[in-house]
Amino acid sequence: MTLRATTLFLAATLAAPAVAQDAGDPAEGENLFNQCKACHMIQSPDGEMIVRGGQVGPNLYGVVGGPAGEVDDFRYGDGLLKAAEMGLEWTQENFVAYSADPQGFLRDYTDDGSVRSKMAFRLQDGNEDIYAYLMDVAPAESAGES
Image (cartoon, rainbow, N blue to C red; front, side, top):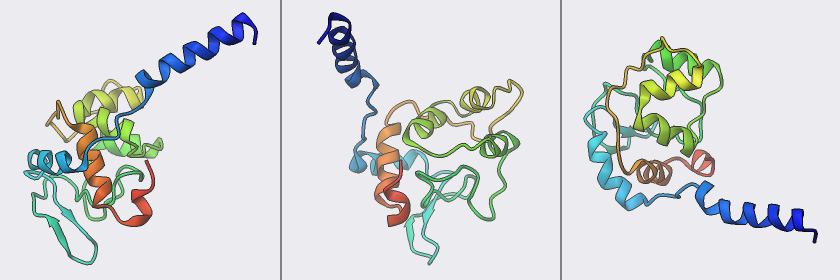
C-alpha cells in the first residue's frame, strides 16, 4: 500500500465514527415523544391509537423513511410543500435536522430564505431517539427504510 493510499484509508477509518448517525433509543424516544404529542398523534390507518395526541401537526404513523408532506387530510405549510416537491424524505438525518430547527432546515433545504415552517417547536435533544421510536411503531414496509 502506498503512503497516499494508507493516509486516505486511515483518514476514512478515523472519520467514520464522527460521520455515523446515532441509531437512537426507541424506549427513550417513546418517553421524549411526550413533547410531541401536544401537536402530533400516532394512529394507524385501521384506527389503532398508538399515542393519543393533538391534530395541529400531522399524524406521524409511518412517516419515517417516506416522502414529506404525504399525510392525507393534513394541510401542510408552503415551506414543507416546497421541500416535498423537491424530494424531501424523512431520513433520520433530515428528521433530526428538521425537528431541531424546522424553519432553518426548510430554508436550507429549499435554498429559499423566505419559506416558513408551520412547526414552531424546536426539539433540542433526543431527536435520534424519537426517530428510532417512530421507526419502532411504523408499519413493516416503512420501518426498514431510513
